Length: 329
Image (cartoon, rainbow, N blue to C red; front, side):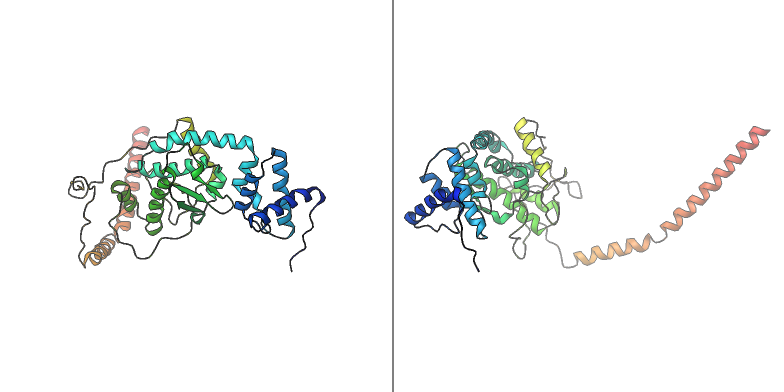
């Protein structure tokens, strides 16, 4: 049973203004979407205090009947906080100069570059480190040249006028490729292949997870956790501060791994792609047999090492006895 709406006296005018506007705009006032509230604020300009009261009235009306408060999303809060809006505008200008310069290819430089570029785009949009850490992949949607952050944020990167057109969407697409591979394989070599060539030669069965953390930690060797876990808010804050202060570490692009026999894996000119070796049907059986034979051959190692320890101790005792005899003589 729905609770009856009883508007507080101090909010009656603001709520009446909102419901009248919704009737004229053919929108639903209760429950209202964040987009409806944003459109209402745009069509009814006023001072900061009046705008805050209107949003407070809308939130209170929703809370009183058990609905989620549309005015609490990040997009609305940015409209009501002019000082924060100015800070976000400065973030956008900074991101415009940093993001395009970050590497997207190369190992492991491209891996760090792709992740940090997305972190800076999200930060420029108005999200803090804690909000970035809690994002789920289902909250982000590519739309044209920009991104839409859904959930409790309702933000759109098409508002980032200072950022080059298409940067935010391309940044998300490149990082999505990394998350897709990391979801399917725990092998760092597969990620390395993606970052060196732009694609992987491994054929996967099934689709990547539709949900999961957006920003994940990367160790110095380019490995990410498996299964993926979210990067902590303090670590995200450190990444942001390092880029804004110009102290971000430069991750070198390492040479390709050398294969057995001393020959580096060569790629055809231009394509940057190589053909994966074809393994015969007995490859895994041969490897299992080799490990089994090695285990059998090593069964006596513990006994041999124990015997060495005993003989070493005996020799030490003899040496100490000789030294003691020499000193007393």
